[in-house]
Length: 587
Image 1 (cartoon, rainbow, N blue to C red):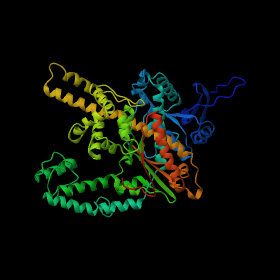
Image 2: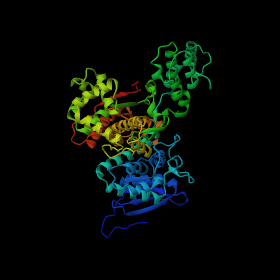
Image 3: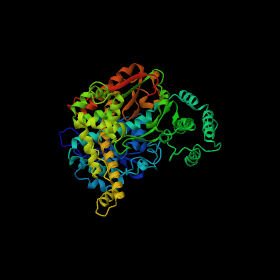
Image 4: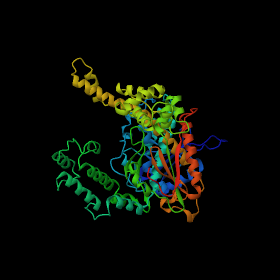
């Protein structure tokens, strides 16, 4: 299928290249001009796809359109092919069908085949590993269609929704950032995090005792468990069974309703301190012990599975390996390859700074200008200590109304009225059952019908006082959610914009010589500086030692660019805590 240009005119170049399934397990690549017309359509055996994609990418740098980057991109990376940009239909669909900026969401909401859960049910370590299996469908993990006609139809629905949106420019920025995140997530898994198995084992041995035989506990855990049982006067109680442990606690006179550490800490008893130690050791063994290391670390790389947009606010999640929950004590196991460095950067007070920029609150922007924002709040005379400032700001973001938060938040309202009005207004909208929207256009989900009905019933003339109180409590809970949604979601947009800009800057750095490569990072990332880790407001770049300073500069420049992109003309800044090391330190 080819559309020929008029005689005497230059052939148009593809603005978009759509990938989808064809008959017999083949792959169809449809090239589209900027106006949407079809320039050419090619059907290829799946084994031929990487070379064709590489050719078109080198010649035209089109935007690649597919059902799901997690299903298509990893195999291209394995073949040494990287792409500059894409349009991930699955992620974009989820945003557009809910966004209040979309004036005609009906067609998208009717396309229920593209609706997917926020997180896949099972870990997927080799995303898209079946792309070149002729009997497999790469998007099956997400349940979305991937035939070429279905893919093009969804693209048309999405482009129409964007064009008719209330603010298409904002929305396009969000969708481009979200799709860039899909590429980054696949690249992070492909490159992996440099991981020192020996150091990990040393940390575990120091904390738990030497590695035990299968089915038994490490020696130090056994010892601490014995201390707990002795203090409880119960030599056989199972510390890993909450019901049995709770009964033993009650028999020992410890009146608790659960075995949570927060509740246990409120009580004085000889069993409490060793029990809290045991619980901490158990979490380390279960979440990041030797079994975890055997499963998730190989050839010097830890390769978790990231899920872009896996949280309703747009934050990332993980569906395997726990990348977003690496405990601080394991950070020293992140170690650069010989001749390489880890360039780490995290943003100081990202969410409060985003709130200041969104609300145009000049006093709050000034409090953090070029320095720690919490210290700036102290200097402004709002509170006496940095800790009070932190507690107060977090209370403002998350709806804290009691204790230190409840005491400090009223002072913040007087000093930073615009910032507080923004989150207070978002909370009020949520309490009424309304939805709120981030800076670029991601909207919060509408309340469930049961919630709406309960609120209506509680406001009726026959409602009992208990029903009214439950409804008020439920409304306040929803208000706390929407209060935080607008800020956390916008902070996620800033972080995506930061990473997207950084990814492109790193790709421009020169490749290293063959004998200097970090081979375990794969055919693409063994040759150049690349993103290796991401956690909400933190990135780690794995870079050749002689490019570490250039990578650091790229991180700073990308942070500045993200601020200008989202908040043009604003004096807000996003200072970074940046280090260049061989081994990550505990944070």
